[in-house]
Image 1 (cartoon, rainbow, N blue to C red):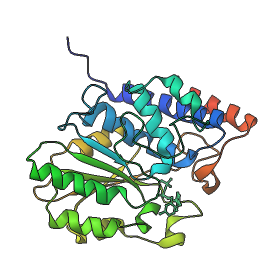
Image 2: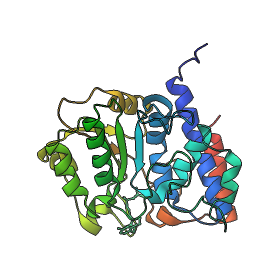
Image 3: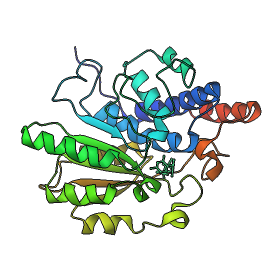
Amino acid sequence: MTRPALTDQHLRRKSAEYRRDVLRAIYHAGAGHTGGSLSCIDILNVLYNRVMNISPVNWRDPLRDRYVQSKGHSVEALYVVLADKGFYPFESLEKLCRGGSYFVGHPTRKIPGIEMNTGALGHGLPVSVGMAIAGKLDAASYRVFTLLGDGELAEGSNWEAAMCAAHYKLDNLTAIIDCNTLQITGATRDVCCNEPLDEKFTSFGWEVLCIDGHDVAELTTALSRPAASGKPTCIIARTVKGRGVSFMEGVVKWHHGVPSADEFAVAMAELEGALK
Ligand SMILES: Cc1ncc(C[n+]2csc(CCOP(=O)(O)OP(=O)(O)O)c2C)c(N)n1
């Protein structure tokens, strides 16, 4: 018997649950990257629940789709989604950032479902290019998805990888930019401006789509669209850092911040409210 497909309404509810679970995990751990985890939740939700061929059953299968979270500091979002998909029990997150636990503040391959250690920014895209080249050499059908932050684009070898992806015609590669316009110390345009991103990726030979990164229908269309032949795809997903918690939205200090008990209560009331 096949399961009924998740409707957009189901997915929106899932995003609200994920946001609540992310905040709860960070609060109990006493550490975490709150703002960027809340901004990328809808992207992960659509990827894992609608688009990618990945599950605990097939994740060692060479033909599985690959997901690389290059903006590794938002790992709390990934932990929650992987728990929901059944890669490990939710209770594992009670040990987040505790001594002896593999559930640390950045992704590591010791956790089921995680493809690459990330956190030193700017390395997820070049490794994803390698995975996509391997897929081409093997004539394999899998797709490679990489999540980048807009601030992260100032780091590492992103632009070298961007050139290389176009050169090798990697139409099995999709980079999604969680474009919340903020980074660790301020607005991305003030720290190291990389605008206009759409023109940059287009001029590097990528197919570029600009969408609302909180709209599950728009995300679904963009992420499941057949690739432009011979071109990698860049999805610039406009998002809000701290999305879902009014006093965190668009506020730099919540990049890496744990709410006080009173703030946590207010935030949870808002996130629970979104579930009604
Ligand atoms: C190579 C490297 N340089 C600097 C940092 C420190 N750092 C951590 S998060 C961050 C900002 C990232 O901004 P963005 O990618 O926009 O993340 P988001 O707003 O989506 O959380 C920086 C510079 C790092 N982790 N790695």
